[in-house]
Amino acid sequence: MSTVDATRMQAMVFAAGLGTRLRPLTDTMPKAMVSVGGQPLLRRVLARLAEAGAGRVVVNVHHFASQITAYLAANGNFGMDICISDETDLLLDTGGGLRKAAPLFSTSSPILIHNVDIMSNVSLAGFYASAATADATLLVSERPTSRYLLFADDMRLVGWTNVDTGEVRSPYPWLDPLRCRRYAFSGIHVFSPRLFPLMQGFPKKFGIIDFYLKTCAEADIRGCLKPGLRLLDVGKLTSLAEAERFAAEAAGWR
Image 1 (cartoon, rainbow, N blue to C red):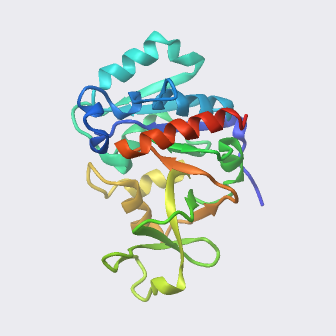
Image 2: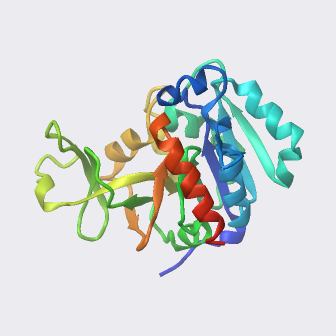
C-alpha cells in the first residue's frame, strides 16, 4: 500500500464558523479564540499541526475575522507558513470554504483538514501518512450520535443516516443502512486536490459532507477508524469543562 509523505503535509483549519452553540462567548469573539487550558482553540490546533510536520497551513475566517488575523500577526504566525482565506463577505460553509482556498494549496499532496473546535489524541502525522490512494479519508469514531456516516465493509463511504428521524442520504437507491457500518465523523479528514474539479457544479456555499455524499459513488472516499481514539467536540458551552480536563490530560500524553 502506498502512503503519502508527511513531511510535505499541507493543512487547512476550518475557523470561520459562527460558533452559535458557544454563545455568549462568541458574541464578542470567534470560536477559534475561545480559550481552553489557557490557550485559544486555534493555537491548540496549530501546535498539533506543527508537531505533525505541517508546512503550508490555511485558516479560513469570517466571524470576528480581524481578531484571528491580529492574533496570528502578533505571534508571528507561530513560525509557521500560514495563509488566510478570507470569507468576511460571505460564510461559505466547509465545502465552499475549502473550494475558495484551493488556489492556496499545492496540487501535489493531500490536504489535512481539521475543525478548530476538535480535540483528539490521534497522531495527525500518522493519520496523514496512512491516507493511501483514496481521494479522501475521513477519521471516524464509534461515539454515540443521531447522525452517522455509512460505510461498506471495506470502509468505502456509501451514505449517511439520521437514526432519530430515519432519514437516509446516499447515491445508492438500494442501500440498506442496517447492513452498513455506522460511524460518527470526527471533523478531521484528508482531502486530495484531485477532488477540486468535482466541486465545480456545487453552489457557492455548501458543506463538505454534502459533497462527500454526492460524489462517493464516483470518488474513492474512505473512513478510517483509529483504535483508542479519544475525541472531543468543543462546540458548545457544556463541553468547556470537559475540554479543560481533556487539555490537562493531553499534556501528559506527549
